[in-house]
Image 1 (cartoon, rainbow, N blue to C red):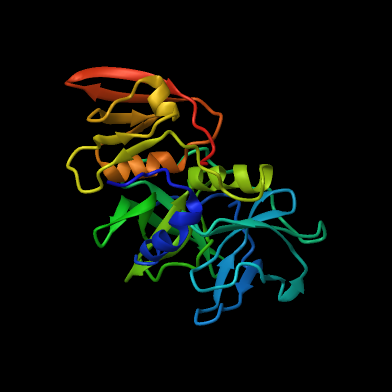
Image 2: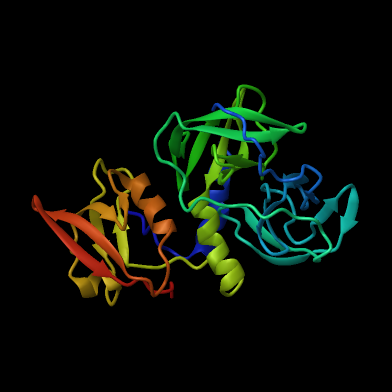
Length: 298
């Protein structure tokens, strides 16, 4: 039995290990990030240094990807090959996303972000490499790697060549950001973080208390069960107050359909404290729907 909503301070080390396992038509005026904006992170003791493309997410605000083993507290931000002083707004070790504030003098380009990444495979996207806009394609959504459940679902993308560096933005046909590269998956494939995950983490780190705080419902599920069946409802929790019972089978959380444990883990990643969410389930074959308000983990 696994409580999917246990506080992130307990999840980070275990899930980071799991996370580590793992197109057509040019734009007339492509809205791309300058390849000159790169961030280097030194290695932690026994770890490895890493680099990421910096992608603008607001005025003088950038998002980057920090690989495991790199020190997220000591970034070296390079603009045109020159080092620029930055302020670390915050870092989420589960998604690997970090947000940096740079001086207003650093040149940036206003970029549009999609609200959500398209869920269907075969979606054509583009990315910038060597000053050229190249094509790539979404092949599938990845919920687990090597039998291990990921804390949030990633996009698998075929780049037709070696995957670009982490942080590289993936663009739709209108030049809007649909995801950012997470890491290589070998050969010509790579994983990318969907835009909704960037929005979710940014909400807490940049607009909240500097760290990701997931909403807690008080549900536990069996990771090895064939169905996303509730195995335990914690007392004095939002789920208990709403009347959810053990053996109820989840079918949706908010707009996210739930077919298995991995779907539930991904849906719970996006829960926000104090923001009501609908929970659909089946009880003895009867469809039921509840409205729950997640709380911050205790």
